[in-house]
Length: 501
Image (cartoon, rainbow, N blue to C red):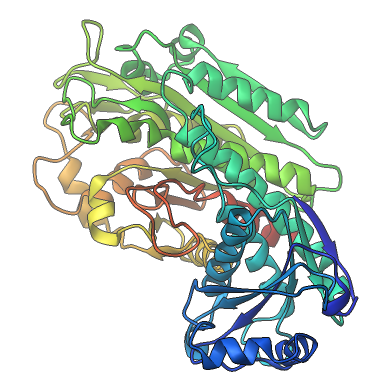
């Protein structure tokens, strides 16, 4: 999407839609009152008729009939002023972008509320970019017809006094949210198309775009030779070979000694192995690579932004399938760090492949680690589809991540990780087992399992099972089911903040 930020008076900006926010109950802001004057009171008439409303996500259009340079005016409802936040503005911007596409519009100009908003102008600009790109995302690229397809906005303009100062913030947000949609493309892709090998190809293609990125991928023989017994075991039931995907980001002018390690679970299809999942909604298990896709897309965004921070990304990718070669409940496997694991449930496979990846990224030099994984169904039950669960071994690191999460729109909530939970994964036969027979604290137990493989230094785990892939729309700027790209905005914001310190 092309971004412009101009100080031009809104009435003189050429666009298919000229948009501004209105609260509920409707109170036209000063700039909207000026627009209403140019439209000879038409907005006031729409308010009096009950057609123009400030309800969140409600968009009201009015034709300008040549009285403004824009073809239409869009009043975007943002809800109660007391509830206004960045997500409200993202939702309003998404509604405008979708409505624009429905009437054939491809360009939108936004007037920012610089006087009365609780958000800074930069925060408004970033939220509007997010909503404009994420809202009209079209997941139906495999459809052969054009009916019901959504159309992306091709040009977004910020206008009015001081708008030009927002160009850098808007451009940065545009880069990040564009990579977010690329992540969504891969998570939404069918598992016969998005295999571990194809995911590795995407990573290689990404690395080829930037001199600062280097790529490596280990195949099945190299994975076994390296001693990654957990990843090898999970992958051995599938005819599609696994990959351990690695991206290294070494920008010019990187600051300090911090090396950010990103790890993402990428099970491109999870049938549950021999502990077979129920058939109902199994088709959604193509999304079990949402953490890995988010990591790869975030690396692309960080590289395109040129952030001065060293980064190592490790994405273990395979399928978890039943079959004659599949690993079994009762097997004991040896992870890369030498610890032994009794397999009690082959559907608790994500923590196994992450175990090898976490140890590998630490041994490769990462000083601070964060892993993203669609790990437990219990996280969906506990937190729904808005917050991810955040666990870790360092309080300062957790709060740094949570602040980045809230600023980015990829929301997260810190969970406990007390040592007493270790007893749930005690094994009579090995150093630990990969699941518990008790239906208690499943997300915490999974995180405690991962902690065995993180080595020394700050580490955080994000269980994104509810946020990475939606069963249905959330009623906000994600109004349809499917992949959200959760984690791309968060990791990009985290890297930006770390590189600025």
